[in-house]
Image (cartoon, rainbow, N blue to C red):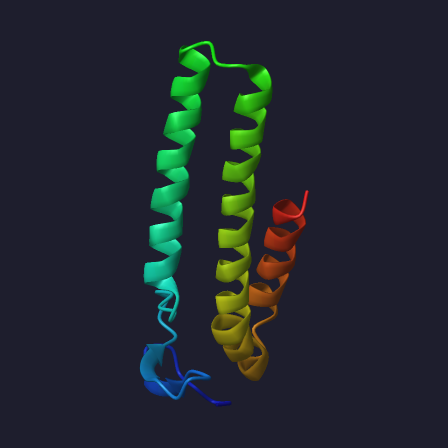
Length: 116
């Protein structure tokens, strides 16, 4: 992988054997095998949060609201873990191979914020 030029397209193979094209443009588009699952999880969490909002508007018991809010937070946290795993398996592997210290530093900053 060393010596890859920005804009040059090359192939990667996912752990399941799926191959996908990848390039190192200035605007790096992240394409991962779990994108659809992440979007579905975010949609569900968004809908769940809306129902928690309605619970508050309806004056529901605070304990019930907190339990449901905890479920939303957990769903978002688990979705973040999926994104992190995908990022490490794809982008960070590429960054290490290419010696892209900035990408690794950005991941460290993101992890610090994520686990607060």
